[in-house]
Amino acid sequence: MVDSKKLYCDIIKMVLDNLESSLDVTEVDNSMALDEIPGWSSLGWVSIMSAVQEKFNIKVSIEDVENIITIGDLVTYISGHTET
Image 1 (cartoon, rainbow, N blue to C red):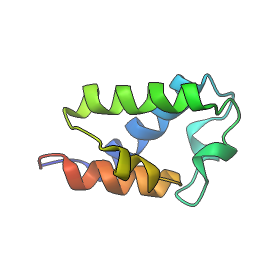
Image 2: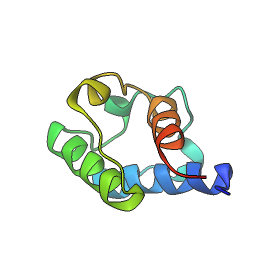
Image 3: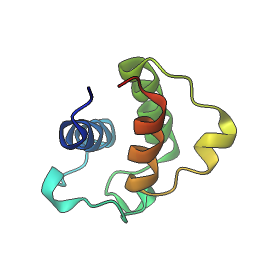
Image 4: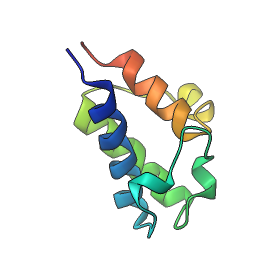
């Protein structure tokens, strides 16, 4: 069974690490738009999506990527596409 709190923290850490952001995990919440995170860039976004696909062994379509706007969207997407 997937621990949702651990999954949430893992995803946030992955995002922050890939963007080389100075934010701490505790400074990010579900409503934060990904492009509001310091260090965000389109290249960083590609890096995040690549890391997500590799870590969680899922494929993310272009259509799905276009609908992932906030941290919460990303967490919901990954939660819904990983095995429990």
